[in-house]
Length: 343
Image (cartoon, rainbow, N blue to C red; front, side):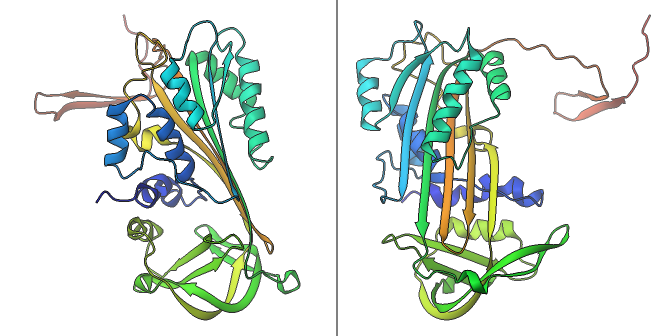
């Protein structure tokens, strides 16, 4: 049986945040929806994502998970095949022509407006307008897929706002202030993680089947090790009475998923009449916040396809060089801080 990608992808997707002592947030559900769309009329890629533990059939979500798919293409240049149109219709994806080439700023506005609308304003944009427009122009974007995923759920066991208090949180950089919510009830716990966790906790949401989970690693156990263990899923749970002190938070993060999972970038895009496969970048922006009422979360995952183009690179600031032999061993190396004027 293939491993479940939604669990196995957590560690690589959140690795940079852990190593840099930063907040991180990632939506495997939004990413896998994007991958399923990219697999339309692409059997080789469909087989690859299935090998990685991703079912090519989109799962049924609860009413609280709102997933919206959009596709934009360079107008008067790309003509989707009827089979591709049928496949996108299966995902309820809207299809629209844009003039990426001549009006990148308007294209950026359209994409950001869709991101904001479909995430109920939780994500105000996919990328800052001027940066997205510059990227569209520089990378000569001709095709862009977008999945947005919005979730809003209320706690089954709510927190009393009158019990919320200000306390301290031990960050990697030192102590910080935090607002702690308090609740004393019987909650779900995950016994198989108690060898590496001081506590595991699960609070059911009012939506049937949804569960909010938190794992507090023991001192000396890294978050990276905990994420590696979570690759196996959470397993069976039991119930136990806890008095929970959980900080309220709101975090947002970006990641380039095509760099983290290069094997999950299609090498061809049949169905769009492209003579050559364009370079593809998969980018995600995600956000989650919790308070006494419940949880809100949103993600926007975009697959951007641009033309291959020669880029100019100027070695006009300090750099490093090396001469490598036929065994891939460095023979000479140098740091160039000032090349001087060569005559």
